[in-house]
Image (tube, rainbow, N blue to C red; front, side, top):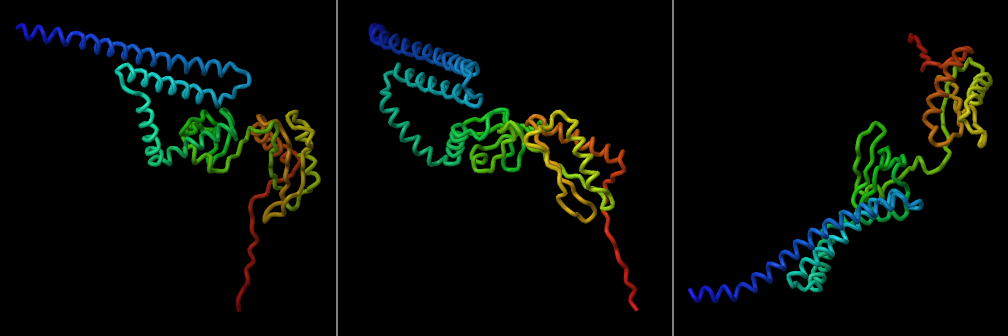
Length: 273
C-alpha cells in the first residue's frame, strides 16, 4: 500500500504536466481552427469590398489564409508536447519533394491555376469557350476551374486542361461584331434586299454607327445569293440583336417579295440509245 502511494505521488506531477499539455493543445487547436475560419471570411469580405480587387482572386486569398493559419496551429500543438518543430519542418520539406514528384499532375493543375490568376485571360463572370466547352466562369481554384454552361450545366475542368487549351473570352472587349448571312433567290434584286437589311439595322438603336455596319454579297451559293451582314453592338447585346434582326429581316423580306430560297438541284436526264 505504501509502495502504491509512493508511485502515485511520483506519477501525479507527470499526469498533471501532461494533462495540462493536452488541455493546452486542445485549446490551441480549437482557437486556431476558429481563427482560420474567421480570418478566411475576413479576408474575403475585405477583398470583395476593395475596389481594385478582382473577384477571381478573393476565394484563393481566403483559402491560402486559412491553410497558413492551420499549419501554424498544428506546429504550435506539436510544440506544446515538446516536439522539435524545426526537424518536423525539414521532414515536411523532404516529404513535400517526394509527394511533388508523385503528384506531378496535381501540381501541374496548381501551377496552371497560378498562371490563370496572374495572367488572367478571364475572370469570374466572363463568358468563355475553353476546349470546345462554352459557359460562364464561376470560380478559379487551385486545382479546378468551375463553370456553368448557358443551359445551366455545371462543368469542372482541371486547370492544366484550361491553361493548355485555346481560350476565347467573349466579354473581354466592350464591343463585338455580329455576323449574319441572309440568302436570297437568284431572281431577286440584290440591291433591294441590301437596302431592306440596311433599313432594319438603322431602326435598331443598339446598332453602333462607328464602326459602321457592313452589308455585302459574300457568296454565290448552290441555291442562293448570300448577303453577309456585320453590325457592331455592345457586348451584352450580341445575342438579343442577332435574334431580333434575323426576325425583322425575314418579316421585311416577306413584305417586299424577297424570298429565302429552298435548297434545290437541277437534274438532267439523258436517254441512251
